[in-house]
Length: 251
Image (cartoon, rainbow, N blue to C red; front, side, top):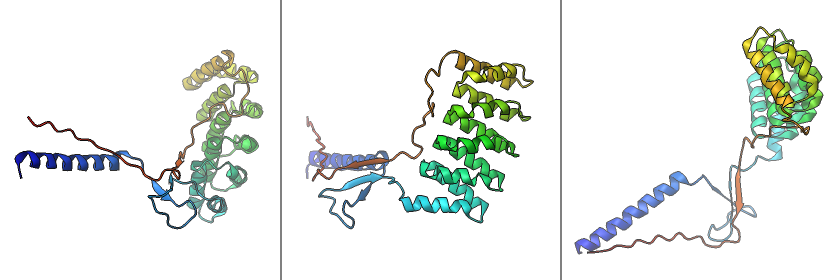
């Protein structure tokens, strides 16, 4: 076998190895999904998906765990429902605000803010009076994220909370909602002993006065789905080929 032939074969093998490794590391994880259930030949039509959504039964199972006897299990159920962006779970989460564990209640108000369902605003307004500082602070942030103006009066009252972190989050929430009714409370907050709160109040007044909220919106800051999924159907494609051409010039 001539040296030129050996060189060409070695080059082709190296190229194939490099391309295979690159495909493994750079291509997103995909799993084959049978269209009709059971096995299906990949060379025919297949549905391909990555990170398929859980079934309704799984959501129901997580909702049931909100009443589990173990507090750690209950908190994990809350985090999972928030991560899955399951608004169907919003009523159950709001009802679970009566949980005796303050960490559980704090997790719930955080989840409700992520879900952005305005039907949970009454529960979050009540949470502004919770005995736990963490719950009150997270409730204020959640109300700001949801952006429902029916929370403005409750937030104005909470602007006098004894805890500085709660007051700061309340001020920020009022700025996010952008209702003119909050101007007086924000003006008072300009005199707060905490510099961070004074700064937040000044920013909130600018937000409202700058007409950044000309049109009421139930959720002014929509976030991308926290659990994005890739799903596409290639059932109409029978073959996928990748051609690699190697031009070798021998001089």
